[in-house]
Length: 424
Image (cartoon, rainbow, N blue to C red; front, side, top):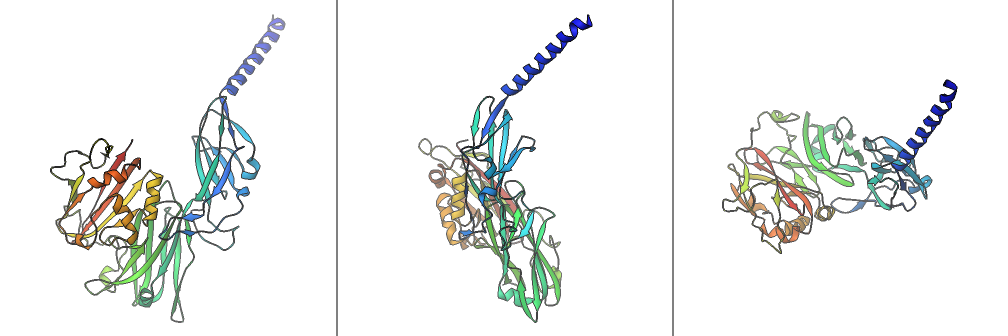
């Protein structure tokens, strides 16, 4: 019996294996690179458009295919992939394109294109369907990092009686130190730009300034949220004299001064600290932002669904209450619409100083008519009639969130998000 059944069992096993192989083939699709073409965009978003150092030849770019678990299932150079294809199991994948094998967490620029840390690339989501071919067409590669430079005004350098540094960090644990050195009574500082990997779609930029000023070691820290890849942050530290007559430090970035959240360097030893000032007032000071009493079209600041202006006129009126009076009023904007991002770039970035707006911010005020200017200072109540924003903002489909940060004259602070949703 064994002699009779052994060949039969072997045949059945071979048939099963062949069947399984055909089933696997039926679950596969093709990812084709035959029509893949890489464009290179070397511009970066900054106050004035500029260029960053161009990486090596596009032929040497690395192409990786990652599955849903972020495992690399295929890897080759761009030149090797041209006119080729790869078979993959049906499912969702990401095609990652980089000018280098990896993106360094933080590194200073160099003049050598082979060692320069600027990395260009893109990530393209693809879906592979069984027995079908998915094409990768034209892809535009942009800078994958945030570029940061630090400079100082002469008056601040004159205050320094010894060396110092500005430590810049985007990915926690990976700072770059921009040194300030004194030699022969002359101050010099690190003028190279640094490149920083951005975890996720955006991150926070942290700057810690440490220096010897009038013989005392002084420190301050400043944090900016909403930092994204393909942006150039030109940071300038400047001397400022506050109303009490003490010398402090302001940071100028993207065309406006960021001083609301600074723990300033001062010649007074009481503020020789890093971090939160223990004498600063606590809480939000009763700062609120709400719909006007007779504005009944919406009831949720986090989900303002903008109606079609051809059908319904929008009534969007808000009231900010600041019991101690406005000292600083800023807006940080986040959007998932590329066109709106381009408008923000043209207006000097996604951050607005409503008290001291940059000239370019007028573009944003044409779309979203925020109250702005020096008349906001010391106001205890501010009316926001944003109804006129309906027509100009409606073409920008998606979700646009405005983080309204108010600092009052007592140092209290509150950040309130307002989200407009269009066509979702």
